[in-house]
Length: 430
Image (cartoon, rainbow, N blue to C red; front, side, top):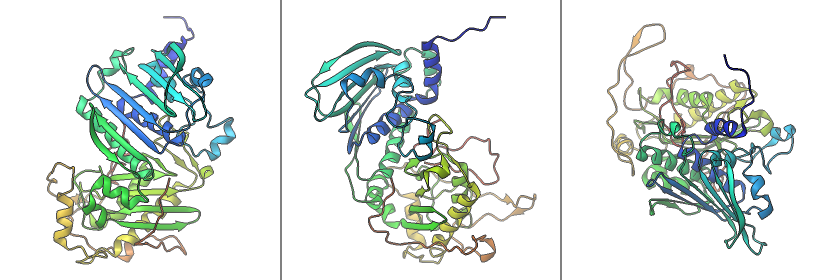
């Protein structure tokens, strides 16, 4: 048996990098979120598949001082927090100080940055976690990070990546999710030198939905705004009767951060349960705002999981808020004047999606082994008996929420094994 020894710094960095730089999509996510934390309002992502892959993220943010570049690429170096008490009120995307260090440990990384009042910029180059060059360079204000030869120092990890096309799709989904949460930011994505999308800044979520989902679906979706016990839920939902064969249009955010939270997901699906057949999903972009000290974002290195101080209250709040909105759309024309034909067309003909025929509805058990009839493809009104409302609480749907905009979540059947793998969703990184 081998003796116990301390691991070397390169080995430690390589192991830790796997929790943050899991795949190209997670690299894109971390770098773009760094740009947003730096106050950027224009971010361009260049994603190249050829020659081992290359990712370039350029922004117009505050920039980094030249004498801080070497510190910036070290693990646990951050400007976001100073002590543990700061975690109770953290509102930035990043705060661990791990992203650049983790990415640099498993790739070739070049960081060029310049602050607006500086006469020149600075550059640092890192390979496999080792600094190979630092110096001055001409640069525009902002920051440009170039990542190449990802996982070149740990080739075994490349075996677990999907195809080049699939990895690109995950990265693009991450950017669409970021775009939904930040409508005032100009986001561009280029793949192999060709524009994939260019989302210019818009005033509110409604404008961003038109860019991401297309005008027809965006117009059909309705805005929601509900408040209770310090919780605020805003966003847009598809009406009852409009559904899809995948969860790619389902995104949940907590305090502006996309989350992969089972409690929130199950609450949303429970609210839609009366209106959807099995294996069909709504389109939803929901933003839950809660006091930072009531939610723990320091649960997972990727910060995709959160822990609420009262998860049951949050779950019931989401269920009741969405149910109240959906009740008005269960009539033949619905609250928004959509006919059954309109709903069917929206569900099957959405820009940018390859048509997939949903599987036929199957008989389902009521949980006691007693089969029940498959649900209708059309919406049915919810009954009062199904609603477990919060005492003294009545959420209100707002059809025009004005300029309100808060800074593909998965779906899982409510009776499913909680350890089962979740389906692909917008922005999800596995």
